[in-house]
Image (cartoon, rainbow, N blue to C red):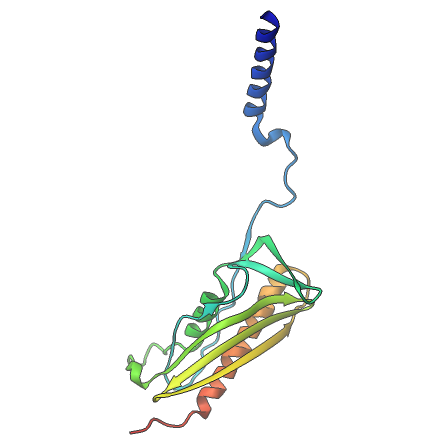
Length: 189
């Protein structure tokens, strides 16, 4: 009986030591800080009035940065993330790009080109940032749709360089949409 008490006491003392030291006996993780990245603020793009509806995200990850490897294998990072999922990031970027100058009066939504869409790719593929988007333009009871895949060169292996290249891809996309809007016919009476 005494041996059981000594054994139980030893186990309890060992458990107490482990609980009190906590994680301090384990090696410190290589990286424990999570870095968040965002797209750059866009320059104002002058077009007819635009209303950007929420883009949806069809990529596999919500906020983690994705890297495509060997064409079909995707890798994500727990330590490098976007501020928001790809759809809301692109929505915010477009809303800021097509914003109304402060001196202008608000515009009736019926007079706006309405943009909506779906982000199909928002990833790193080798040395390129890849942005794939299917979007719709609605204006004057007409709907126009298009799917684009934009690649932009990444200058280094760092996540900040990926975010920089994705910002350039988003800018190319916004200017592509602006060019499409410029081609739309005038409003019917």
